Amino acid sequence: MKWGVRHVVDARGSFCPGPITELIKAYRKAQPGDEIELLATDPAAKSDVAAWAAKSKNEIVEMREEQGYIKIVIRVASKGG
Amino acid sequence: MRRIAIIGAGTGGTILANALAKKLRTEVRGGRLEIVVFDGSESHIYQPGNIDIAFRGANPKAFRRPPTQLLSREVKLLKSPVSRIDLENRAVIYDGGAKMGYDYLVVATGSIAAPEIIPGLAQASLNFHRSQEDAVRVWEALSAFRRGRIVVLPALPHKCPPSPVEAVFLIDELMRKRSIRKDVEIIYATPYTRAYPAHGIADVVEPEMEKRGITTYTLFNIDYVDPAAKKVYSLEGEELAYDLLIAIPPHRGADVVIASGIGGEEGWIPTDKHTLKIKGHDDAYAIGDATDIPISKSGVVAHLEAITTAESITSQIHGTGKVYLYNGRINCPLEMGGRKAVFVSGTYVKQPERQNPSTTKYLMKRLFNRLYWTMLSGALEPIFNIYLGPPYEVKVVADDANKSP
Ligand SMILES: Cc1cc2nc3c(=O)[nH]c(=O)nc-3n(C[C@H](O)[C@H](O)[C@H](O)COP(=O)(O)OP(=O)(O)OC[C@H]3O[C@@H](n4cnc5c(N)ncnc54)[C@H](O)[C@@H]3O)c2cc1C
Image (cartoon, rainbow over all chains, first blue to last red):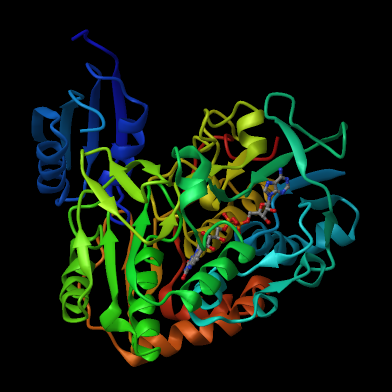
C-alpha cells in the first residue's frame, strides 16, 4: 500500500452534528494509504471514532489529548468494506 | 455611494438585509449606501415546512412567500442569480454577464440536497430536503404504502441534523394512525454511533425509538444503491434491503460558489467560525448553510450569523473598531411524534444536554412555523435578546483593520 496524503479536519467546536460528519466528508475523498488528522473538542469523539474505525476496518494510528482538544489520526486502510 | 451586496434571499440573507436596512437606514435614505440582494427564485421557502408536507400532507403553499414581501423597503432586490463571484476584484457577475462592484459582500447561498452524488441514490430514493415538490412525493409514497420495509437513511453532510429522526418518528405516527403499523417495518440507518450524533440527545431518542419498534442500524454511511435489487450498501461493508427508501441526501454548496472556485468541488466556503469572514478577505462574509464551519446547517445558525454579520458590517461602515464574534449558538427543535419535542441547544463550547421531551416544546415549534415570517423582518429580535442574549462577543481592535476600506 502506498503512503498517501494527510487530510487535516478541524471539527473543534462542533457537538451537533459533531466530528463524525467532518470525518466522513474527508473519508469519502480519501484514498487507501491516506491519513486523516481529526481535531475535536467533543469528548464523544474518542469512542465514536474508535467504533467507526473498528467497524469500517480503518486504523487509528494516534489518539491523544492536546491542550483543550483531542487529536486523532486515522490511516485509511479500506473503503467500501 | 457604497454598496453591500448579499447573494441569496433565504433565511440568512433576508434577516441580514433587513437588519442592515434598520441599522443603516440613515445612510441608505441619504443616498450614501445601497443594500442589494440577489436571488432568482420566485418564492422564499420555509424549509422546515417540508416536514409537514412530507409526513402530514400539508399544503406547500402555506410555506412559501414572494421574496419582495419579505424585504424592507430600503433593500433593493435583483431577481437574478449571481453566476460568478470575483472576491479579488470585489465584484459579482449576474444576468448574463452584467458586473456589479461591492464594498461589502455576504454570500448566503445555502446548500443543496444532491442525491446524484451517491451512485443509484437519485433513482432509488425519495427525499424531503431538496424541494417542496420532493416532499410532496414522499407524502404520496407514504400514503400509498401498505406493507413492507421503510428505510430512512441520512447521508453526510446534510442540513438540519434533527430532521432524519423527526422523519422516523412521524412515519411511525402516520402508520399507527392508518392502523397498518404492524405491517410496516421502520428502519433508521444512521451514519453515527448512536441514533443522534449528540449523545445527550441520543439518550432521549433511543429509548423512544425502541418503545415504538423502530430498528436502528448505526455506523451506516451510504456508499451506493442498487435500485434493481432494492438494496443499499455502506462504506462500512454492510447491506440493507428496502421497499421504500427515504433518504436525506448528502448536501453540497451552491453552484455559484463552485463555479467561482471558492469552496472546492463541494462548494463549502472557507469561513472563520467567529468573525464569519471568508478566509483571507476583510470585506466578504459567508453565513448559513453555505460555509464550511463545522456546525449544524440550520435556520437558527443562519439567523444568528446574520445578526452577527449585520453588527460587523455596520461597525466597519461606522469605523467603530469593534469586531463581533459568533459564539456558535444552536437551538434546533426535534419533534418526536405524539405532540412531544426537545430542543438541541449548545454553543461552540457547550454541548447539547439531555432534556425531557415535552408538549410545551412541541407547541413552541408549531408556533415558530407561524412566527417565521415576522422573524425575518427583525421584529422579534428584542424578545430573542431578552431571553437568549446576543449570539456574539464583542471585541475592540486596536488597529484600523476593521475600519471602513
Ligand atoms: C426538512 C427540513 C427541515 C428543517 N428544519 C429546520 C428546523 O427545524 N430548524 C432550523 O433551524 N432549520 C431547519 N432547517 C434548515 C434550514 O431551513 C436551513 O438551514 C436554512 O434555510 C439555511 O439558511 P440559508 O440562508 O443559509 O440558506 P437558504 O435559506 O437555503 O437560502 C439560500 C438562498 O440562496 C439563493 N441562491 C442560491 N444560489 C444563488 C445564486 N447563484 N444567486 C442568488 N441567489 C442564490 C437561493 O435561491 C435561496 O433563496 C430545515 C431544513 C429542511 C430541508
